[in-house]
Image (tube, rainbow, N blue to C red; front, side):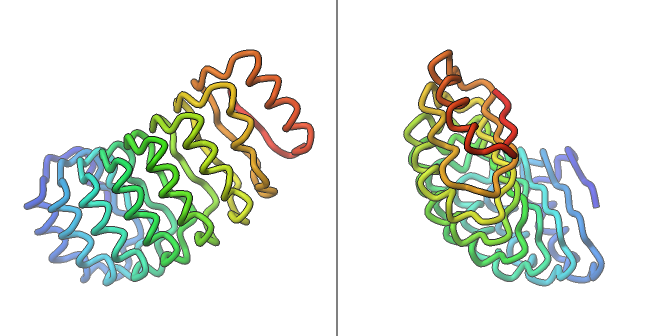
Length: 222
């Protein structure tokens, strides 16, 4: 079901939530760019556990904030089939990233998480990192355009070795700079690392090449 950019707001999300439990075969729900806010996210979260077949939920560009992210995180453990969660551009900040991290390990089927453009910063990256090691099925993580900087990248790097299934990591446009090589960490499964728009310069490029020699299967975009 695709209802992208339809101005449904929180009230519309609530009305939709009232019937979602009856959609036994619903696999994809796209409510991107609908201004549902934290209230709308909360109303949807209340029934997500009833959507047994839901595999892909897209709530991008909805201004759900930290509160909305928290409400969703609280029910992730009930979403037995959820494989892809798109929450890009929702202004969840560091607090929202922390709340999500607390619920990520409860969603055993989650393979792809998109949090681009959420202003999580270095603190949010650190909070998120604390929960990544519990995401056994996570294959694709997008954190592009989040202002995480070198400090945030370092916090992520410290836990990448625990992410046994992570193959694609997007850290583009994060102002990481020359310290970017650190994010390669010890993640043996990583196949693609997106580092575009990070002002890594000649020094950073040199460090990347040196580290990449030990990761022959890794493709890096920068």
